Length: 352
Image (cartoon, rainbow, N blue to C red; front, side, top):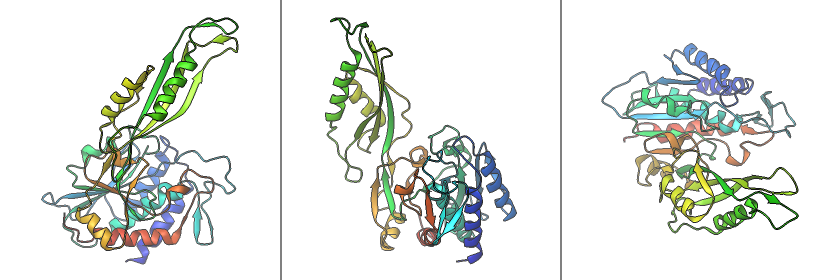
């Protein structure tokens, strides 16, 4: 392991944290990453705020592995006691917005790419630092996949404690509306849309889809927003609510939507079907190598760029999911070093 590559990666993460890179506002950090890659001698490719490089020994006859993680962040919570863009270091950890989710994965994957690219591998490599992951945006990694050619495998960097997420739940966001009739609250008039919505929400709370996944468990439906009424004395004729639905691999997103729409009276409109469940077979060579290294396979309840990458994929990265989107988010520097080591052990001379 080249220690210079490790130090380069740690310095890059510090620089990334110091540049605000909220979703759709990643230009400055993408500029910096692109400049750094160029200074290291790589030919860079870019579209919007997505930056990628290819292995130096590219061979069209070989399969291609994508190493992908994202440079965008959520907005900092109000409870930060440190400067979210300060890249503060204390007790072996680096504190800053995006340090854990997912800057550590970006720089660890890039460092692994540089190590693996020093010698011939039985595959091509693409490293991509992508945008808009936190909002599942249309200008993220999905928008540049056509430039990568056929992919045989993707390694998606997210904070998993360097354990292997071999499956990941999909996501559907449903906008629902219960409709009633306006009336005066003091008289027995109208049809209260709130009561209709409550009946549908109660149905969703009890709704259990029969197919359960060994890796991911059941489909999970959670109502997360509700809105109705504008006057205390008027029975509302509309009540809108939002359902967050996490799907397993037993159903397509379209199938789950149809089941829900037929189960309640409210109108149900899906925002998108594009974030389906994803994963990798347990007998895949990468997973088997990971198990031999003592890594534990598990099913992830959260959604990442895996959902839009149309090939076999695994999610693994330094850091812990519980730190993501929290005040004083941090990563231990040793987690990054360990992450690079594991990435290299997983991928070096891997035969697909």
